[in-house]
Image (tube, rainbow, N blue to C red; front, top):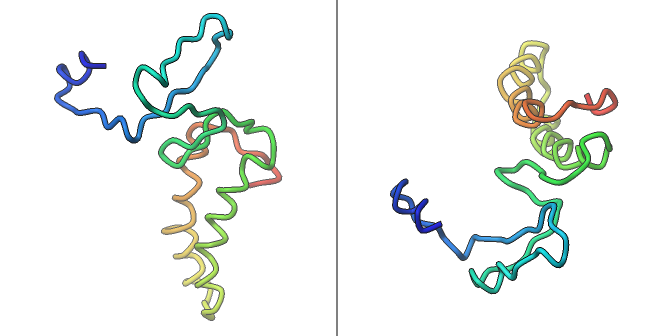
Length: 112
């Protein structure tokens, strides 16, 4: 990690660091959390607002995305929008929210 800092010119913030075991058995695991003095994490976690370690084939995986869209729609429901206003809402605002999810995961038909 020190090499990464030197090459990239970036600094690692160990307060935001988590150690997660992926694909190692218990006897192969080192105490990385003790070495770096950071907490352990276990899947599923969120990275850049995307869930990692979940099952995209389950409806529960998409719960956060659906909740985010519902929260965005809540203030607009109080307004009486004509067709043009609804179209602007969908095209400009609502269509961009799931793009990040759908660029990585195949969306379920029931969620779409």
